[in-house]
Image 1 (spheres, rainbow over the protein chains, first blue to last red):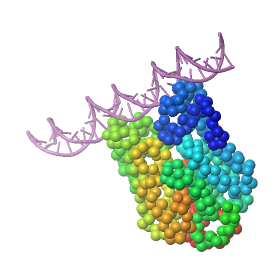
Image 2: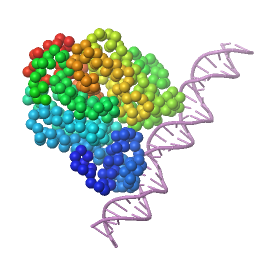
Image 3: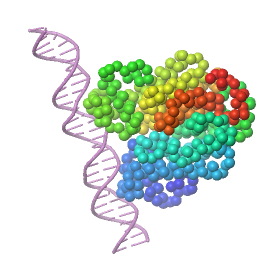
Image 4: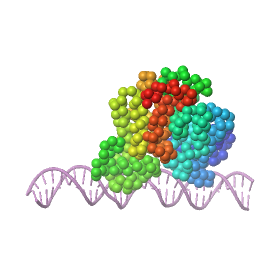
Length: 211
Length: 211
DNA sequence: TTGACAAGAATGAACATTCATTCTACTTTA
DNA sequence: TAAAGTAGAATGAATGTTCATTCTTGTCAA
């Protein structure tokens, strides 16, 4: 069940089978295009089990959402623990998101779906959840410590992670055909070094050093 | 019916009433959470008219999609005609998108919904449509002409417009509480000047000049 | 001017289908 | 044996769609 880390046991317990099947189907077809019966068939369980474990279709979605938010949160927590510099933390988070996009695409796709309220009517917007608040904090620290130029927080996070999320989505939609990690260093250079005229590229030594 | 420009005539013809009602409802609740009966009530037309004009629920969605893509395309065409420098074109497009986000939020929201395939099964991904291909071309020209540092095209467009789209979405979700145009110049500075350490800000003269 | 007629747009009750959910019976486990 | 878990047929509410009918508009003959 922990998708991002650890190995799945076998035989997988019924609730994990349900969640995994639902995740795959939701990501492939969209929540509203998936029926409980499809989930039931894919997971090879009975309708009754689904209702026992999750209380219904939206129960599955909610459980998945919680689960996925948690996994992203752990990613951020781990990175925060392992690295001191906020700028390095940002880069490490991006690196891992790119990597997971290749190896665990469904979780990433579900997390960055961006229209959760269309089927999760009660839940917070994803950008108000723990991991994304933490990321905002990290960006603010980076600016406070002078690792990034001081600017408005929304702008800074939108620029850095807007670009990252966009690339992830393009990759998930198979618009980008190469694995994202190939783009990592180029992206970091451009995102943090700025898409500026090459006339002053040589003066931009610090960025290269941090990288 | 042309939402972005021109005035609506009155009394509005029936097909416009249907499209406008559908657009509002789709944006507010999501395609799958809106029934044809709701559209019918909101537009104050009969169910039959909807089927006469659009052939069904997905017909409405398709018509709306075509319409909205067209409006964005016209925006890009106008800007391309009125300005020579690709960099200035990019900035103008961003400026107008920010402005329309405030004045015509539903069209912008529908255009940047990003999950169209979940209800428009046949249509192109939005990033493969005319206006967005044009934007990619503009970004490439800007790099060719040395107005932007040469880098991978995906990275360049994702960084610039990923950030812009992210801010638009945050604004539409009311996460950002101030009108986007207030952020415009700050964003341009950061996006094109780069989020780099302020140590070398002084050397970055060209960016300020273009702005 | 008026009335008959035609064309087609609009109407909405009725229909058919989908699909989340319930419920009761059965199986396993402790 | 009791409790918990699983099974899947049956249910009915929700909702997309159809189509016979009504209304509107324009045309033309008397």
